[in-house]
Image (cartoon, rainbow, N blue to C red; front, side):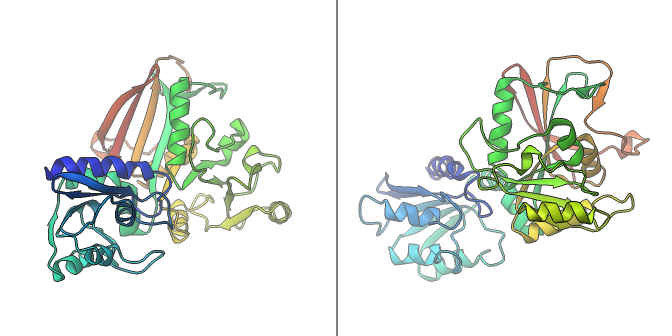
Length: 361
């Protein structure tokens, strides 16, 4: 029965996707005499953790009950008190944990608190699923850099735009809705200046309910128009412009006068923003996940430097022939040097096929 209840807890945990970050998604069930008497999930960063919500919604005394938690209960004071100590206080008899927490502040310590008070623990139930649920959190907490997802839509012959740079719309309506859902599940959405100049996107979440991510534009020399749509609705979605010291001082002053934050990052050998240093800086800002939506130059650079974790390719049943490709020259001449992916998911949205793959390390 442990796996049965843990699957229920996993379903609960997913309800916090896009809201709990940079904290992990966590689900918790309280079971007593074969009956679920309480359940909860981590609804939003800064609010009660899953275990506390489950306790607060329990229908009867928890004494002697079993907790099912997808991630090890926390053991330290942060924005909320330690969950492990609260479980001890309510006199649970057993705690079943999906996986340990890689956070050094927690890892193993929550389990130690429970066991030191005579509470039986079982760790590793549906562990693979529990780790996969929080792949963004696990990457961020271990490296302090964001989990990077590359997403693009292409025709079946691998083009992201016509030879005249026209790209609206390659994918279907359901795929566009899915793209907005993806935005809401990431802390930041990133594009290059070429995409701004060509498409003038808004980059907010509109087709689904969800949180707006931080909008990030890489613009090494501040070519961005001051009336770009990405500067609108700052009260709902902030914009961060990333540039280098070779930018225009006048343009910088005007952007700052508009209340737009500008971040300076060192140049790389091609006089462009050093993407590796940018990811480190975004990690310092607690940006734990980024969705990269283009363009081709940014995607190519991230692939070439192997600075991504997941690739999500939306393939439409259309043929363009000559056109623009999503990934440009990587300097690879031998098949043995190709960058490998592990296909994780394949599914449909409308007329399109979506393939998700993880980079092979």
